Image (cartoon, rainbow, N blue to C red; front, side, top):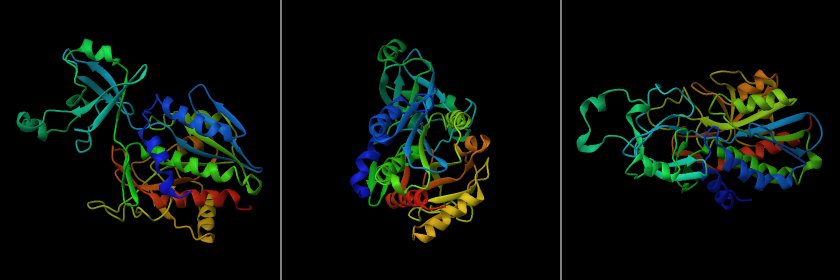
Length: 352
């Protein structure tokens, strides 16, 4: 399938609301899309998906996470404004003032998306110099859903503990796309494309292939720990977004990868070293099949890989180059999606 023809699928995945702990819409989408094509299907008590694709040989887990960066309602004011904090971090963590204010918001209550609004803060003529100069925290902004009172907000279905996510329709710009939750929906998309190939090539697989879709990766990889401790796999290939230095003000000697350079094979991130033998085997497969790839060494970064390594599973982290990670405007190059699918497919069919 041409990548452009697959874009509506990526659009669906990106626009689904699924913050940590509330991944249900993404799980429902995957169940409808994948379950009828796999040999075994399991959803555990945490909400992880684990399914057997097929093949014979060592058991390999291909995994990506369902959750996205999100926020949680901590208070509703008498005037109907929604105060939030991070769904991933403590309340007093400094807020990155560049990427929040003015973005569209969706509020997820008991019945799904119950309200839409914007992330807002004092602005324009009423903005004081002291507000501009100080380090902002989650106490310095709010979500405005157009409500006039707490009662009106609650009538919509907003409640303390409700989740809030960014909302941005997927946008294509030439060979690149911009959207929210590319981390990690773009990699679930890679798995979606890979599944189509593998179910037609089961006889040629050199492994018993399993897919995993995990919960709460952004919240310390709890879902991946549950899978790693419960199941015995010979190796794991977590998939995630990769860091690049191909924009102004970022040093290429810190992040030498770029959009369009192919998947990034990660040697080490902030918390774990990945298996050297698997990494170079993946690199050799890429060389043999003339698939572009890049090497990566990431700081200020973690993935589900830590859970699999801590569970004693040999692991390699494969990522797609991504600009502006952890924002509502994450950018990827479509060719990197195709090359990542091709590399994984070749690796899984490579005779040991």
